[in-house]
Image (cartoon, rainbow, N blue to C red; front, side, top):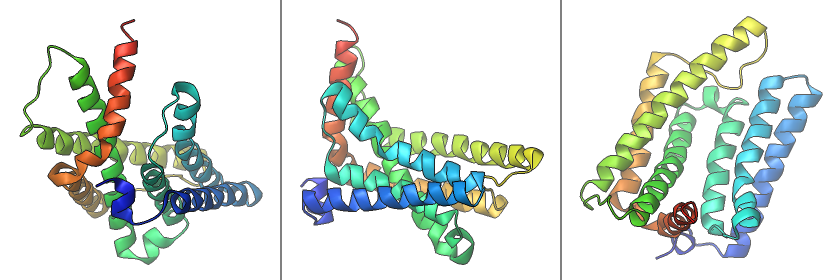
Length: 212
């Protein structure tokens, strides 16, 4: 079963939803510029840039990512950008949902790169039973880096006297973030890695082209 079939939407609907969410990110960026809120503007601009990476890959490497995967990436980015406008503080569950959705993307991308390199290499072979462990450990490693980034941007914003694009709400928030990041990683490790097999094939070909 493909990711599109799991989501239950046609590719046309997935593309339309992606464009809609990208329009929301553009709106967040423009609102941040007009209201002189650099944190909001950065969230909108950076989020939009991330959602355009699949299009850049298509133009540069002639690889078309699944519309469902592009939509999932865009949803993850949009949830974060929208959450920064208030939902993070209004709804306790919003941050947990956002981290779970984002962790699924991170876990899938990490798996795709790792699996692509494994398929390319004649010397590396990882037992199938170990791959889920790698996925979870990878997500946790990225989570630590993300929390450090949130803390650093918060400290820098205080020094500069501007609104922080990333905010840490305390130790409890960090622990909760790590917990739901782990949930996202476990979802992929438990049976979601197959949705990223096409992407791992792309990375395998890219690793192969680097030796020619």
